Length: 200
Image (tube, rainbow, N blue to C red; front, side, top):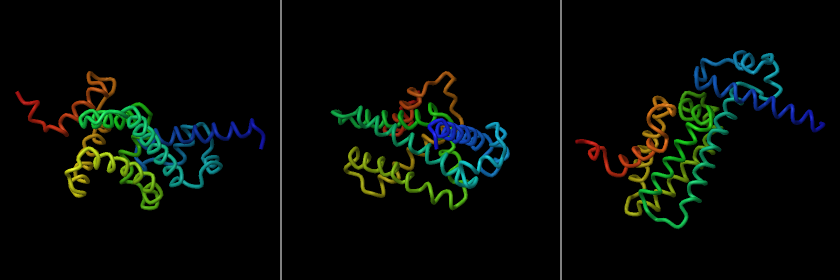
């Protein structure tokens, strides 16, 4: 295959992924058809099979790409925090990296946050390894930050924090009056200190 054809194929695959991610976020997995994805991409429905063997395979690719963005954001935050052991700083920066992955990298991460549990079982099974690797990074982080907590407590804390962060995909508007950094600070402070500090 020539370089030109390779580039065209890669570009075509990326366009299909972009359109699919947008539609999965807007309409959900069940409500999105390959015909709609093809129309949004500007190709015939059958042409999608040149890049993906099924709607399920396409959704797996979207979800995996979303997790890769989150993993990269976590690793970048971890590198930037080398040399500090301040728990609050670590939590805030990792919360910010998670939120930034959701709101600053298009619909791929949003699709993962909002649509993973509504995906077919075979799709979830295909995505679980990457999903677990991301959660394991948080588990290891929490083991370092909260050494006195047992495994059950650490898991509960992570789930509570993930719930707060991921729920923002449903209501937070990055173009509104609150920035992602301010949102990260609010979530981090409430996670570490409780909501009573905000009461008058």
